[in-house]
Image 1 (cartoon, rainbow, N blue to C red):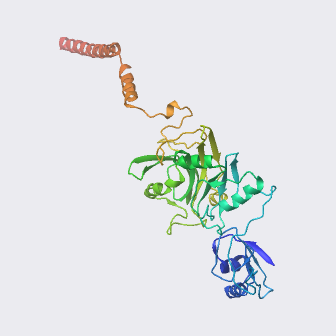
Image 2 (tube, rainbow, N blue to C red):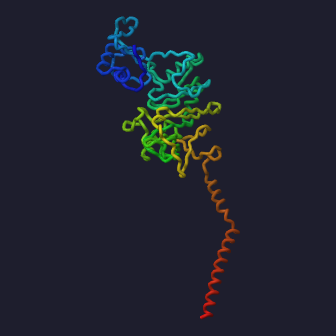
Image 3 (cartoon, rainbow, N blue to C red):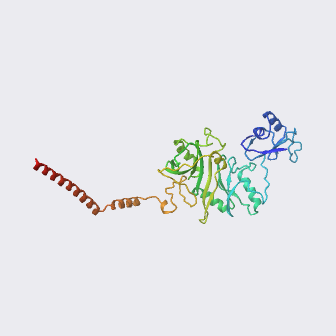
Length: 384
């Protein structure tokens, strides 16, 4: 028996020709129809079966037929059923996905691109089902598990699993108040460390700040201070700048075979006010595409910064970061009173004494010039 792990989404016959060693699609189809191919331990006889990255495929080119295991009462039946097998985990087994945070209340892991977070069909293999199975084998107390958030299949980022109902309800009810940070990979270029003029769903204008992490001759990697749910609101502003998100849409360039969006940061506040900072690294496929690029120097226009670490939350989905200093006082907006105070201070810098002094000096200068001119005219008149 030979086997391999699927690297790219596609059909079963495509996977066999690309990774299974079959020289022609005809031979791959015959092997599938003869029952010589298994997907996740189940015999599959349909060449057009859709596979996802991470699935295990085993095949035997030396055997002509492989009969599927018949269920009780169905002896001799060749019917196959594509079901999700239960992964085998133990306490020493590594988690199926990278875990970036875990405590007694919830866990945060990185969902890779190509995986569905959760599905109502229990037979569908999802990222949550894999993580749930692993958690249950790590601790018998992990019996009340719930997924908190969902992100699209073609993107990657932080996903949470609550370990009790109290935290699940708290995280889901307050999800829009948690600050998020996302990496966006675009084809095109933007001014370094600047901001995008966007609009909320209700039409309210808002400024979204970003930082240019790296740029090549063709692509730019951005760190954006916005939630994952607001990507569709940022896209029009990127188009106006001549930039397209990689893999986003049918007409967008797709060098990575996935969307160029990754949620890397999440600031969570617990039921008792505890603040938790969750971060992840840049996806390896992003770094591979940006290899050889440099970090553009910000201009003098804005020099925006996107920093995560201290909780700074607002009410809008697209949150405007007015200030970038470390203190809380600088982050407050300027009210009309502060503007008037600053104006008054600027006016008060010129006192009446200074104004009178300056006026006297100017008058004295003009008087001396006029006196010298008059004296010269009188002398020339006497000589003549």
